[in-house]
Length: 198
Image (tube, rainbow, N blue to C red; front, side, top):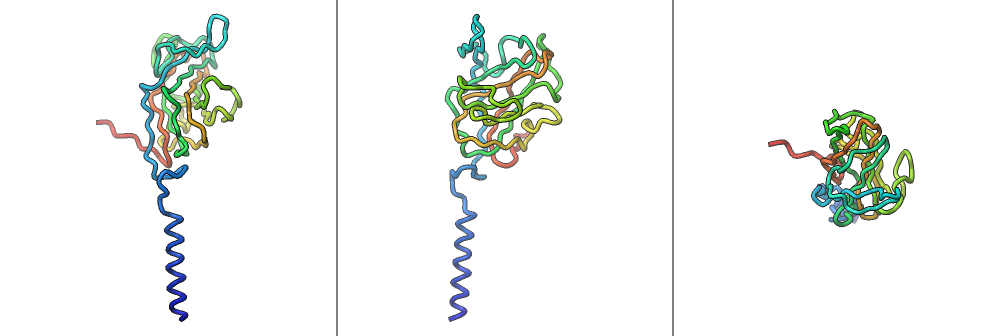
């Protein structure tokens, strides 16, 4: 009888372990979710000011890059998606960008050039927290493309968000950066390994 009880206990333990480790298929933050690579063709750069200095939000004709050069340091470009993206299955994001001088010359990637934040509602509050995420901005990262910037690396940065992402904002840290061009937005779990160049 003792042997039968031991066998039953082992079978029960294995069943519990199997349930705990089995892929839930679509569970929040599930590591089995394939990386979601955003189609950058779905982006629309929105106008941030009308002649009265108020938010406009109308498309400027730009997609992945601001059409007009920034006027000053800490200027922003806001890009919306065709439709909000459900990212609830993901826990990390990798975002890459290039930046250019006001004359259009590409600037070498480095710290203190550009920051990025994801936005749930593009017409909601964009500046909720100077140093980190807020209720409408679940991810905010500095030094995009720089040595200190984790968001542009394969590992990306961790974020938490239950609401669909409606857009993305880039901000220049210096007036030397006149244009910012997004080159990649990937939502994933664990490390994201980019495709090798052919």
